[in-house]
Image (cartoon, rainbow, N blue to C red; front, top):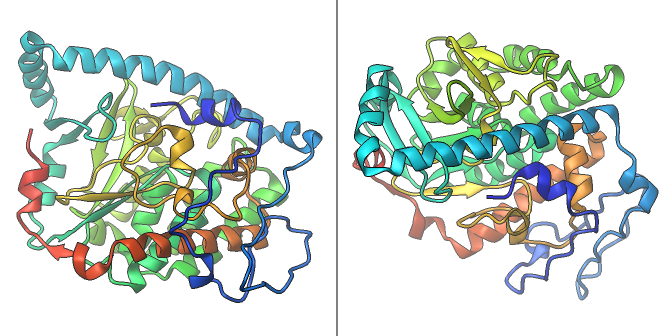
Length: 396
């Protein structure tokens, strides 16, 4: 799988995917045309014509980077290369017939109950502890499919827009398993908490305003933790137990993805999503963070879109999945590729907060992309109650 950082750093030209003949942006936004320029003046839409793509930014704007973006690029680039090399070595060891059994027994002694090769990212092996597996088994009812939300940085509003549509249309219920990395893990906690997506968007704007005024690099983690403590209810960990899988990357003794979905307290849940979002040297001025006595970093570096505990998982990616080389993605900007920002714009907004009106439009685009996907996947044909899905997803 191509690393997220290398994708954006190697694609300077604006991304203009071919138009999807099945998409119809007027189904969701009949009264406005989305435009990513915060200084532009809205024009009334013409129902007989397709809205134009935004013009490419001037070369100077493309090359100009803030300190936060430059810092994020540096650490993402270094970490993704190191982790990718470590993952391939780990998978080779896991797949060796003579070594796999001894490796699994060793992991069992360390409290690991499952060691599974990811079906979408075959180079990735993910693990779960015994108490996380027990938390999933304790759920009496599971609705399939589950939804997995990708790492997205500060493109968090995209996931909120997707979740809003999925909740409104009945795809996500209280019994629907969820999973996520980084920003994806945060949106899972928000959905499980029962809060509205609009409230979460308003909280995101508070975080964005703080970062715009006081800076982003090295301090985003402290601001994020404070927002989560105020926004999430005291019983959020209970609502998430056995339902929400949070992906973190354990870096010792070899990099590997670890899925956590049993939380002892609200603070423990916040620590999990904070760890899942920990870009080295970006959220705080240190190369890693400690989670449950393990040295860990951003979960998206090993598990970009982790599997859920349901028999089927629909994956949601905030970036154009086709340009990342990812397969099996359900909802992404590829669903409805009109009025798209360039890869550079998306990467900048993922690492440093955009203005509030841009955040609103990113939220709307997530809602629109999910609506196009929903048209092709009617809820009555897709959603079902399937308690047996837990046992099948835990097959070792």
